[in-house]
Image 1 (cartoon, rainbow, N blue to C red):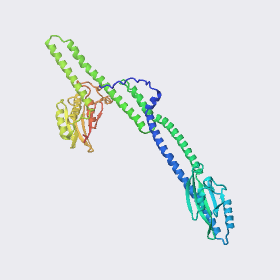
Image 2 (cartoon, helix red, strand yellow; image 1 turned 45 degrees about the vertical axis):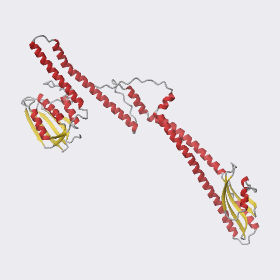
Image 3 (cartoon, helix red, strand yellow; image 1 turned 30 degrees about the vertical axis):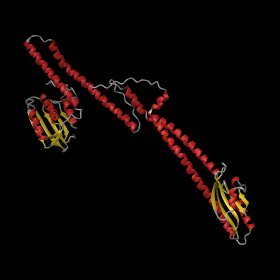
Image 4 (tube, one colour; image 1 turned 120 degrees about the horizontal axis):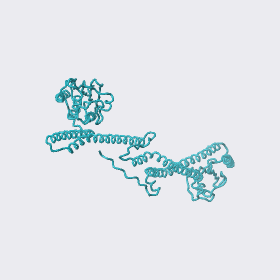
Length: 488
């Protein structure tokens, strides 16, 4: 039996806790998540700023254009009235600028005959005062112009303007200028950007904290797996990971690990029981051989008898070892050497071999024709085990029937049926176990108790199974069910 390597005892780390934290998987995941969040945030802030400034610039230009159109519509209506004069133009301008206040950071300026007549609000900022370059440009306007000027004053920023000439009786007498100072809007938008930065920073920090805590909960099955693996040894395979609620990879990992440990524990239990039973079975012939050899004297007759007994016990030990090797090989992938067998010919050949086992009322029953993909040697051994077992527990006048049939064109069934003493219900539950013999059946052979286990192992290797139907005192029927086409 192969032994699991004993795991070394867990050594407590002397590293500082922060180094242990940095080595954790969740820390690495969190650092990767942090890097991605920083990159995406760094990209999103200028994108947000650009989109915000673009939207504000569009809104400002639309508002400025709307104020210009409202003034010009009123001016055109006034211009169509007859007998207009410069005084009436001034009155019109006074009324419009006094009753219509522009939007924040907007200015309405009217020049008459090259001089400032009125502005709303009624003050001018330094970049467009009377002696400024912009004001001089407006004094020379003869047709509609628009423009943008950036100044050094951080409280102003850029100046957007639209200038239209004003006519009286076909003669240009004035200029109307609608302008906007951008810095107020920009400062308000920058407040929004700073608020966005603060909010996104808080969200990232909170998400990192929650991600750290959530990752700890999600990684709990992996930590439990590591801790459980450290506690597993050859003598203790009972440790399991606590059940993980929900679904997903980690829950599957816990279930898979527990299922794997169940299989390993079951395999170890079977191996341990197998070795214990094999040791018990081998101890008897060894004790017999040793006892007779110790009492051996010089009498030739007694030496001959002792030698025969020793050889017989050694033969029995050899059969036991061979059966154990066969059971061990049954779990290997190359256990079977598959070939196509003609069902009726194979059964007939087997029936001829069976008649040499004992003097019984042997009968052959074949129902159907066809081929089966199977291992001839292994299948012959399994059925001979069943036939030999039937011969051992029947009398000379009992009937033993060997038969085969097709089932649903997908399965072939071989059976061995006898009219012997039968098998009790209690024994039927144990009879396929290794080294098992019926508690209420008289032993009539020196078999190892592995025969039916071998039959079951060969059936499993072929992808089939063994059935037992029996009543005590009414004989027994063993059915070997195999698929017709066993995958190679």
